[in-house]
Image 1 (cartoon, rainbow, N blue to C red):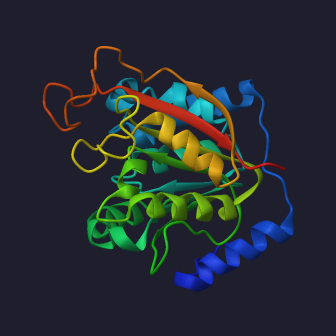
Image 2: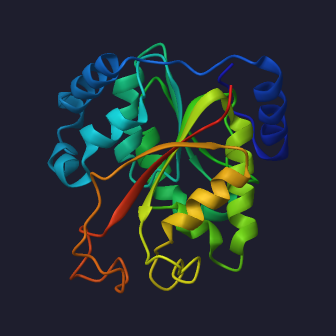
Amino acid sequence: MRAFLTGVAATALIATVASAAGVPASVHSAKQTQKAVATALASPARADQSTDDARRKAAEVLAFSGVGPGDEVLDFLPGSGYWTRAFSGIVGASGHVYAVWPAAMAKYAAKSATALEDRHLSNVTVKVLGSGIVAASEPVDLIWTVQNYHDLANNGAGEAGIDQMNAEAFKALKPGGTYLVIDHADAAGTGLTGTDTKHRIDPAVVKTEVAKAGFQFVGESDVLRNPADDHSAKVFDPAIRGKTDQFVFKFRKPR
């Protein structure tokens, strides 16, 4: 069932199916994941992206997520589709990738969504939601968001915007599914004060808010940490852009 529903109907369907189906998320060995990731990243089909792999620590963060063949993945706010295209190769013909823009970001999605659709990736569904933040046509194994989580609090949304995202992510995941959040770190104790001005977020806030939605925190990777970043600059400042201190958190929906 991969025909994409929109709006409230899509969100309601996922809430029902995810809770009723009870189908647990797939589990791959570290060796399986590493092999799938390495093969996908080496594909000639993404040669135009490969020069950015080292900066993004693509192999490391993808392996940390535990993604593998046959998985259903939701790439939240996929931008140019860098991660979507990598996931397409990793999950293969038996898996599926949903590249999803929330309704509030519709005006930013048109160009990128069209460019991604024009690649005609057979296992990728591209969708701008009519309402809500996260939805797919079936429960997924992994929800992935990179450098976007802090934006949920902006434009007056505040903590409620974050709570909505986390609640919808929880409903959209299979039992045992993974919610992986990568974002620019702000200084300890800053809370949400820098989400709009600096596009950073206090890592402790992320742990607290995601746990409040029912997720278990199961680990973090330090591959994107940068102790030389003092968290004072806006992430677009040329002095720090591309070198910000970032956290990689993995959460799990209980089985």
